[in-house]
Length: 112
Image 1 (cartoon, rainbow, N blue to C red):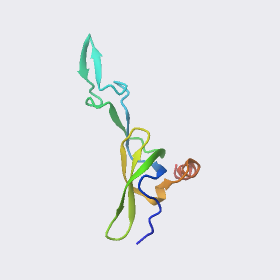
Image 2 (cartoon, one colour):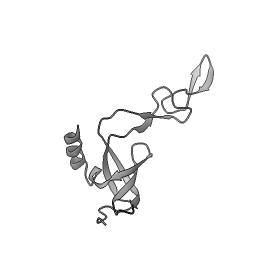
Image 3 (cartoon, rainbow, N blue to C red):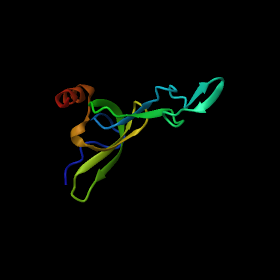
Image 4 (cartoon, rainbow, N blue to C red):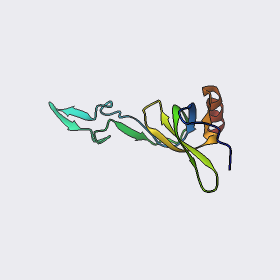
């Protein structure tokens, strides 16, 4: 089994190219739109104020480690709560987690 590098509650920087949730561009995060004086559920985000962004660019997220998973083979992955929008980024490998933003940025540039 690998040694666990990070601990629960630790502040980290994660690089990821997975889809992520961000504030809806249509309703600006409110969850509804106004049309001819009436309010309707936003058709883009279904009223929750957030939409998935599906670009495959590497991005840096600041967050906090919430859970640590060790599978039967002994490999380790983490779940991080993103400071950006409070969403969870699941199944993150240690090679995608960094202690400081400078290291995360360097790794991100190598992968672009």
